[in-house]
Length: 261
Image 1 (cartoon, rainbow, N blue to C red):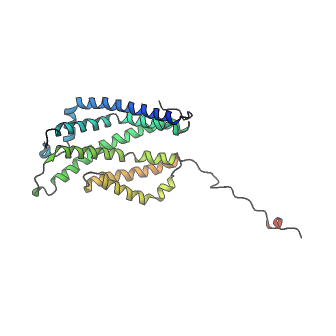
Image 2: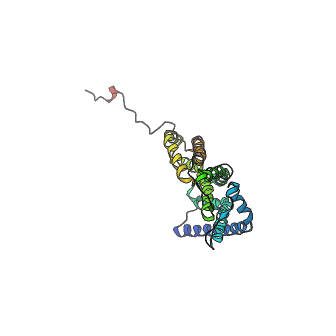
Image 3: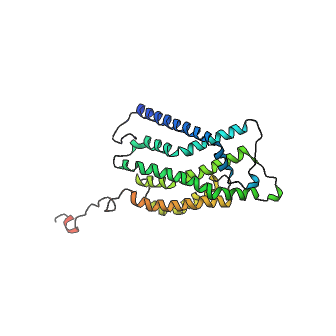
C-alpha cells in the first residue's frame, strides 16, 4: 500500500522506500520474464503475424543473434505483462506528495494508466502495425529484394508497440497537471493549435516506420485524447475564487475624501 500523505519521510526513508519499490518491480519483471520464456512460441507467432506472409521468414547474421533477439522479446513482454504492477509501484512511491483528499484517486489513476498503456499497444498491434509493415515492405517492391533481419524487425516492432502505449498516457498527464493547478481547461483550449503541432511532431518521431499511415494513426488518437483531457480538466481543476481575483479596496466617495475647509 502507498505511504500515507500525512506521513513525513526523511531523505533516508525516501531512498529506502524507493529501494523497496524497485526491488518489488524487479521481482515482478523476473516472474514476467519466466512467463515470457515459457510462452516463447506464442510470442514469436504474435510478433510475426503482422508481417505479410511472404516476409515472415526472418534472417540472422551471427550465432548469438537468435538468443539476443529472443531475450529482448522476453524482457519487453515481461514489461508489458506486469505493467499494471509497475504503474502501481510508481504511484505508490509518489503517493506521499498528495494530500489525504487526493489519495482516493490512487486506484482510479493506476487502473486508467494501465488500461491506456495496454490499450495503446493493442491498438497499434491490431490496426497500425500490419498496415504500416505492408506499406513499407512493398514500397517500390519491384526494385528491392527485401529481407527481414531478426534484430532490425523485432526491435522495430517492439519500439512501435511501446511508443503507442506511452503516448496513450497523455490524458493522465494532462488531467493530473490540471488537478494540481499547473494548467486548466482554458489554458488547454487556448493552446490547442500548439498541442496539434506537438502531436504531429510526436507522431513523426515516435513511429519507427514514419510512413503516412502510421503517423496519422498515432496523430489522430493524440488529438482525440487531448480534447478528452480538456473536458476532464474542467471537472478536476481547483475551483478559483468566485470573485474572480483579489478583493478590490473600496474608495471613499469624493465628498468624503475631501478635507474640510
